[in-house]
Structure formats: C-alpha cells, structure tokens
Amino acid sequence: MKRDFISILDWTSEEIRSNLDLAVELKDQTKEGKCPHLLQGKTFGLFFQKPSLRTRLSFEVGITQLGGTSIVLTEQDFKIGERETVSDVARVMSRYVDCILIRTFSHQMVLDLSKHATVPVVNMLTDFNHPCQVMSDMLTIKEKLGRIDNVRIAYLGDSNNMTNSWLNIAARIPLDLRIGTSPKTLPDMELVRKIQEIGISSIKVTHSATEAVDGAEVLYTDVWASMGEKDKITERERLLKEFQINSILLQHAEKNAFVLHCLPAERDKEITDEVIEGRQSVVFDQAENRLHAQKAILVQLEKWNQV
Image 1 (cartoon, rainbow, N blue to C red):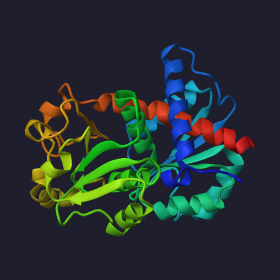
Image 2 (image 1 turned 60 degrees about the vertical axis):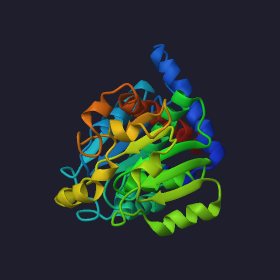
Image 3 (image 1 turned 120 degrees about the horizontal axis):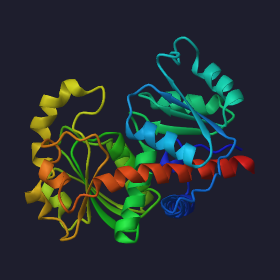
Image 4 (image 1 turned 135 degrees about the vertical axis):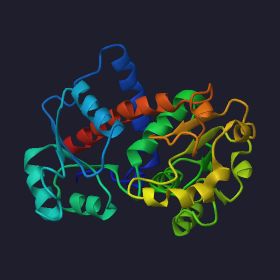
C-alpha cells in the first residue's frame, strides 16, 4: 500500500519523530559533503499552481543532492482539472515518475490526485495546510531546544494553512500551543476542538497577544493576507496590528525565546524588521531546514514504496 504526505496526520507520532532524526542525519551528511544518493535513478514530478521560491528551490536542490531527477510543471504546461481531469493526470504521471509533488490552492485536488495516483503524492502546500513547512519548523525547534515535546509555542496573527498545520502536529506531538488572533480571524474552531479532544496537547485560542506569548519558548507568525487574499490586507492590518511580533511583545516571552516565520515576510507588518534581523530570529535557519526536512520525507516515502 502506497504512503503519501498530504497532511501531518498521514503519519504517526513515531514516524514523525523518526523522520526528524533522519533529517538531522541527512543535514549532517550534506554539510560534510557526503549526502547519500538514496534517490538515485528516481524521477520526481513537481507541479506548481502557486508561485514559489523556497519550495521549488528546496525540493529541486534536495532531490539533486540525493541523486534523483526532478521535472517541474506549471499552469503554462497544462491546466489540471480543466484541460485534463485530475484523475487522468494522476494516472498518466504515475506511469512516468516515482513521486508526484504539488503546490496548489485546492486541498481537495491533492486528495483526488492521491486517490488516483499509484505513486506517492506530496503536498507542497494547499490553502488548507502546509505539512512540509511544519516539519522543517519542528526540525528547527529540535536543533535549537534539543527537544520537540511540550514546547511552548505562540502562533500570532491570521488563521491560515500554517495555523491548521500547527494544530495537526499538535495531534501527534505534545505541545503547549497558544494561538493569538482577533475574534474575526479565528482558526477553524471545529478543528481546534478535535485536536483538544485528542488530548495530546494543550491548545488555547486567545485574543490577547501578551497572553499568547507569556513564557513562550517559540514565537511564530505568517503574513496577514495569504496568496490570493491580498485584497484583504487593509482589513487584516486593522484587525491584527496588536499581534505584530515586535521587541515590546518579545519581552513577554521566555528570555531566550526564538522567533520563526515561514516567509515571505511583510516586514513591519506581522513582524518588525528589528525582530526578524535580531539575535532571537532563526528565520533563515528555519528556511534552510526546508531542504533537509523535505529530503527526509522523500527518502522515507521511497523506503515505504519499496516494501
């Protein structure tokens, strides 16, 4: 039975932990110039409906470092769901490549692609979640704190696919997750309740930024208006200005707390330039870890596919 990586919930807690250990190992080997060619002879089809910097670079570079080959497709090549059905695309690509990766708007499209594909499918991002990003975030936390369990994390700002991804990881790894946002930008409260009911993590939604960051070890934010929502930026700035990560808010966190941002950043909106360039920011370490976390994901899927 093939395995995918469409959501964090596709993998067990043990599988996530093991994969993060593999990411550390691959990162160390890469730094030593000894990245193993574990994907030698494998071809990966990458389909992009959304623009990309980190996602495209990290996957293409990672596949190359592991000895594989990548082929990039965009909307200019074909319109999935329009010129060809999702099911036909899945079945054709499965005959050509060893793994299908997609960065798109519709989460349902990724689910449909997985349903009809006979090779693993990787979600590089949808409007609903971004599992590859949160795996690289956990890798960064593991490096900086030496642990991933019971970390106090304050997620501030708009509720989006990253909020959902943090809620999903909280269903697998015990966290103290505080979501600080306005009453009009709440996360999916049904999803919040489901994760709370699982009982692995402490989940709190608050409308106070200082309450969210009180004693936090990690502060996390994302743009206030995601791709395709830029027309809402003025309203979001009004609603979320109190949730900006700045030097004053940072004082309420743990003394040695560090700051994460999945990028791209709207500097001096959701996060100040001073903070993102400051000593507590590990934003660019976090961006680098996309490369190594994703290599581990692809290697793991390849191992499972061989069984």
